[in-house]
Image (cartoon, rainbow, N blue to C red; front, side, top):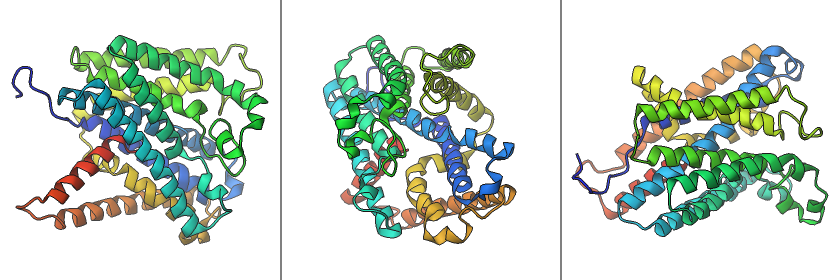
Length: 371
């Protein structure tokens, strides 16, 4: 046990890795079914329900990234950094994720081709995550108390959700260059994700991360309170779906604040749920998947959508696509195990060089903020 007043070292929370592993499974399910299911089966209720589940993968990754950002900042502060230094470190992490987004697009362009430069400038989840982390690090620097941090990020989250349908209908963005406009609202060929509303899931995660990092009440009772907050948000979002919409032209499934808060409430509840479930079942393989989520994301997208799987693109009946998803998931887990085995064998059992120590530190930092 640390001495009284001594900085507490970084402590991984296995239930968050476990939850990130769930996000990995949903991500693979979303991409394999989207890429491989035959068009004739896409109107079936089973496929439609599977796609609704798939819609929780990206929000969960963003939400967990916000949690990790706050936990990492809190750990740095306890180790002696000032709040400003911790915020700068978070800003650098966001910049690194933003750079990774372009490296990923470059890889996709080299391996799969596409229209230049649109393929390199396409806005994907890493772009949104990087920008949201940059903005959140500024929010971290501007707040000195847990209460202030909670109100700031709650305000940002609500503002992002409410502005989404307005921004998507606004004519003011018409003068903005397309590669920049694509960060705010969908543009054909340039957008997979947009800052509105997706960045709101990360800012909401910052709130939960700040709560989890607070040493006062950081136990099971805190998770009960988080569950109560999340349940209230989810129920409020569900009940509001029966009311006349504030934005009649907004699509419920994409730009509606109602659906945003419904999903957000479920995400908030997922944290205490994971905390409770891992007390009963550790699910170590899910933790491994969660820790390797960036690696899995980086590798599997090209395998699912790229030239290697062209023979099954939109050619599998839904049932067969589900079986293929299961087999592909098992193969990806085997690849994660192989990666870890190679990494362990590449290290000396008795001597850790400076380069190895730096590499371990970098991998640890990335794993805490990976998608």
